[in-house]
Length: 260
Image (tube, rainbow, N blue to C red; front, side, top):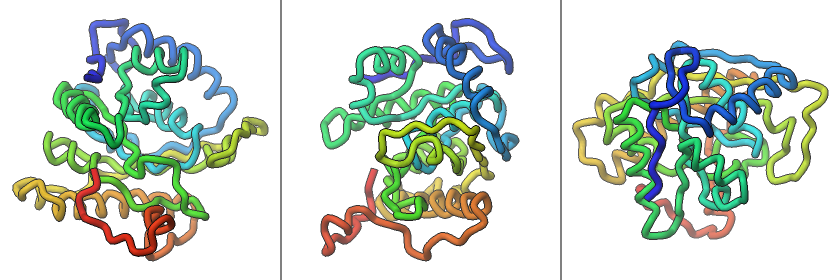
């Protein structure tokens, strides 16, 4: 079972956080480069609460580069994020070892082990950690890069633990690495827009059964909040209906509601 590395014991860094050696290695290697090679438009860090209080941060997914921008934002805001990610990434030599050592959480989709990622994420939140989730589960397929329909895992973790569910909108990483293309254009410097919104309102759902209808309602609120933030960043209006990649492959598809 994939287990997150708890915060501490480890080396103390600013914000009073404790991290292990693998996470420290990532910070030492990557943060100076990101500070040098990117510009930043960061807002809403006050919505992330204090270190030591568990929360779920849900992020739209644009590019293979945006996890770096999101993690940079969260770390500088005083949170050490533990992201859920595709198990295939954890199987890449060296990178996989670093990710596991840094306490990131592999997701085994469509297998009996899939529930382990949720269990690990819930345990991390209950230990006071910040768990990052990409509710779309993959880079958006929307032709204009708006958020797609989402899975319900982030909402489930927040409702089970009672923790805040924070929408995080990211824009700019796609200029460094365009979706699904092996390009890398770091120069000239691109601006990483990362905005955190206020917690999604879930109080009216916390006493309800954790069924498909409840999870779907919570997830719809989450994706609306992320989309609204992204509209502000982009100065544009998102489509009225979210892109659903399942309909591309099956025009007769009808959502079943519970889509963790």
